[in-house]
Length: 107
Image: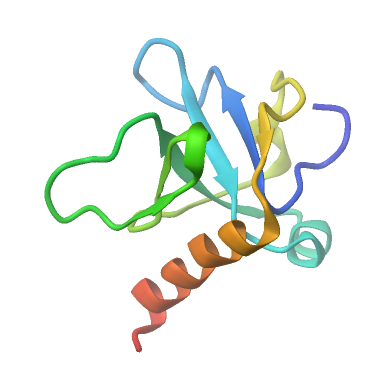
């Protein structure tokens, strides 16, 4: 990925998982945080909703973001990633970020 990933982008990371095929991820930290801290808060994106008590955010045709579990990664994590496969509309991306804030900080 030539440029730094941005808030609301969904991309594929081959090395992002121990499972074959890697993982899809959504950037949920804002661009200023990403640029200043050189860290990114990401969540996994799956193609189908999970059963049980998973905290998810519907991303439409892209799938669902698992917002109950977050990861913080450095820019090296994105090495080898191509351009984003999707850019989520700002309202939906903010909903995912708000779910994380609520999950971590409480009501």
